[in-house]
Length: 469
Figure 1: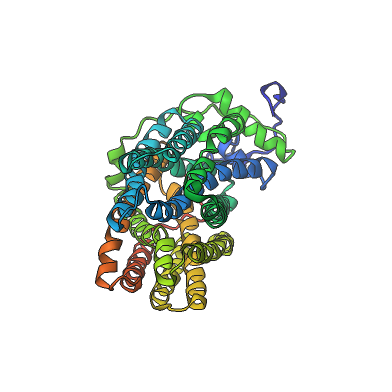
Figure 2 (figure 1 turned 135 degrees about the vertical axis):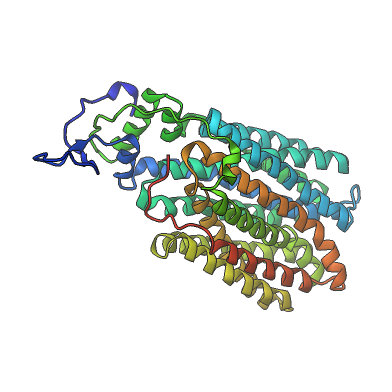
């Protein structure tokens, strides 16, 4: 709905105030705030459009992270580069250095200039950098391009989840955020398909073509800028009431709900980032940081090395890419199950159970010696771990107020990226301990998943509660 479709505000659709005047004949009424108007809506076409538009950007992110695990295996086999295990681990980890910095900066900037602006800019950054990496001529050039890709990628993920969380009605918020995360599976599956069909079949240029495909977010960024609305909570917090009202009416029109008059939004004071460790938020910040750290450690340690490890185990890069593609397909049912359970069991219980199953699956995968067992336990690990990721992205924005939400989410993601840097670098050492096999590495990943499960149990439960301003 555009700004010229403003309708007169009917007097209906008001809700009782919690305070009553002494001796009043009737309960006092107050008008709905804009956020309450959003919360009363059913899931509609506007929500679906926001979810898909944000999700496509999310899928591009996943495709990029997934591609590098295949690309590194192919670059290592390229005679021009001939990367050893240590060099491979640096190509994997340098992107997470960029992601850590990008997550912290992106969330901080998004709380000041807007979620939509940062979302679009980050797509442009890592689209350009992917194109640059495709033409890298040396290990140094690979590392620089991969670092810049990480900056864009790290900034985008917490900002997109914050934006979707702030538009979602309360009873659908957890499910919508998990479904947003499910686009990660789509991107990873596309990456696995590119790894299986494009890289082996296009000679020495295979990995370069794969990275050029990863540059497509440049085109999508233009579409995202036009069609993704800015957060109402952000707009009100910055005194931009006319834009906030227009955004709310757009979502109301999608449900054929007549708009009502809302009080003028009150600009919110800036909240310093150090508030994350103030008395009110310290406990939840520590819990969410630990959960992010442990989940990132096991996920990125396991999945960025998986194509290379399976190639070493079964002696074929093509077979390895095929097995990894099958394992990646299991992400989707994991996400969908988590999206249902997150509103049935709640955030904390769903997250902790999925992480516990991830731990069991990692222990079993460590011992898998045949293709059948690798596929069974790898698919279980993939489904449980990615379902946990969906819930983690759902709960993180919910535990902070509007002016701290993107910064708090970005800070948690940044802490997680530190683990994502460390884990791939440790894998060569873990392989040496095991005599080249994957056993020790995945036992370690399973133990760390258990730590993540314990941390998740300390998080506050926010299912069914309104977001804090």
